[in-house]
Image (cartoon, rainbow, N blue to C red; front, side, top):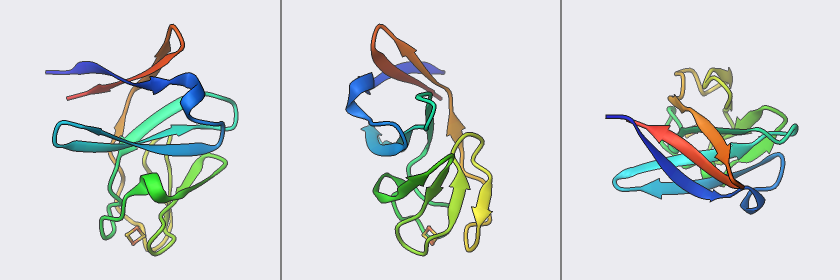
Length: 104
Ligand code: FES
């Protein structure tokens, strides 16, 4: 069943940055894009499982820290090889100064 989970305060992630978020046995990467909106994906790279929370945000892309593949974190589409399998994405919202994601 889908549930909304509080991640952090809006101020905890700078624009064009990423943060790791763990919840239960799941792990996520939470992004704040250059225009201030928030997005969330599965934490692990679909190539060989590096955590994208350790990657670098460049515009609307996350660059994986291990082999430098990249994804568009808004829709999970791979944009730079060796990343070639789509990342799962999760809805992210802001309420009363806090970031929430909806997970299954
Ligand atoms: Fe991410 Fe290889 S583990 S590109």
